[in-house]
Image 1 (tube, rainbow, N blue to C red):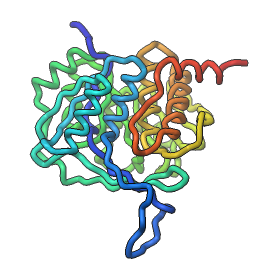
Image 2 (cartoon, rainbow, N blue to C red; image 1 turned 90 degrees about the vertical axis):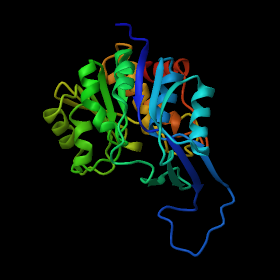
Image 3 (cartoon, rainbow, N blue to C red; image 1 turned 90 degrees about the horizontal axis):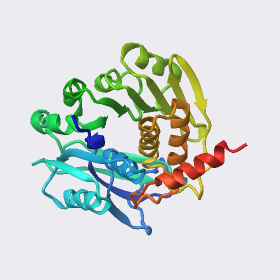
Length: 303
């Protein structure tokens, strides 16, 4: 079977409304004056991964539910402008939305609108089978209803990755993703013992590699039973927003994996791409390209 798609991205399409605040947590007040503006832009986790993969030269296809609304139009425009194939499933409840409060140091607090979905939503099986059959790999967002697509994707024979984001290691919602994917990304932010959670993912599931990103502390990689640490990479410009850094890490790691690189080098790819993402303003959706990634990786590997 012809595999014309390098990576199929499931879920995570939506729009963020970005608000820069003077500090996080934001103290209660009757009102705040926001002189930096309040802006809506396309770009949630699936969008960011798709943009990152495409910028690195991978043939990328994104599939998700979208509403017939202005937010859906923003998502469609982003994919059209970046040349990323998009299969949209009609969503009467509307396109996924969130509000991101961004502090002066680039940290963010996200408020997700969970009303933009129905419990009985499902990806059409015929559509999913066709796309999976044409794909080398699938990256599955944890947005509903992606969990229900996991058995079909596994049956189709594609390798899988997922990002558990700030999973606490206990919430059962994340477990189907954690224990089905071949590559599992997650943030260490909510974990008291990242290595213990990583090992549990590997032992209970089928992950060949588990990666826990830790912001300024770099990332932890577990593969073949061995845990290693990838140091942080100095960003090439001032840090303005951490939004999308984990998605950039995942996209670059997958680029390395699909290029045949060993896991430790894939993690370095991810660290470089994640650092770059932190320099992109929160009102934009952008990613490092392949030439720049390889140039920066080479500079870190030079003796």
